[in-house]
Length: 352
Image (cartoon, rainbow, N blue to C red):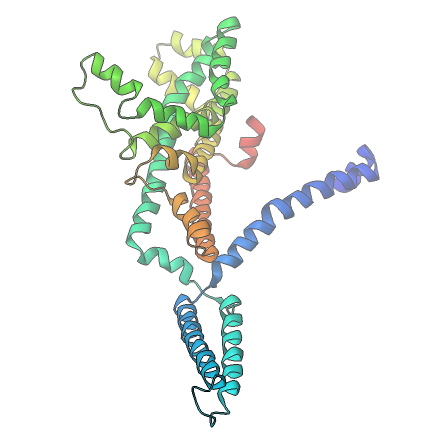
């Protein structure tokens, strides 16, 4: 019996069609179509040199047109004698040429090329920002994993009753607030005269305030805080299913706490750690609000470059190429993480 026939027998024809068509429509409209459009935009290269030459030619012909208008007016007023019957014809010809150039500038020919992609390799500043974004996102993922694993283990295997409830509430409540507002909260904490500098100065650890927001430190702290919960919950879900008797048996046999975690708990939580790492990395690499708020002039993020191409530079084709390259790196990270942890999509979905 085919899957379709089983689905029809279980739910009826109308419901089966609805259950199949709705996910298919969602897949096409929300995932496939936008990505194909982005790829198409990224391969459409705008020859800016040619566009600039057209615009210069339009400006030159506009000046010629104004000069002709002046000469025609002078002739009609009797300043210039008759004998230049072609001025009106020249004027009409210039208007036609300007119209043609404006149409070309507004609707440039579609030239498909990889130049939007190779531009990143030739731009030293953008290339360094791209590499820094990937490296920093990896670092945020590692920091979040180091912080979240002990928290997830404590929630799953140690905390119970009211203590567990209060800890969950403490984790979730900050995420009821918008990400931008959370970033502004860290802006006040990490500012030159903020609470952290005041506290460190009051206990004598520093003599002068630290510029947290001048480099990448503020961005890293803000992103770790913003996405730490996406690492905690998948890991907690796996560790919650870990049989506590295994831990007790290992302890009774003389295994230390480090060996228990390395040989039992962490291997059991691998799918959760993989999901948490994938989610945290993709959110960190694709964020815009946190670097824009907590980063200074020396802490540009690659998403800020993409935003600038789209909205400041008006070059959607270059912005699409940059966005697609970032998406490609995220997909590669997913594949590498699954290879390292030794899990696949079926394993992840089955155990979470």
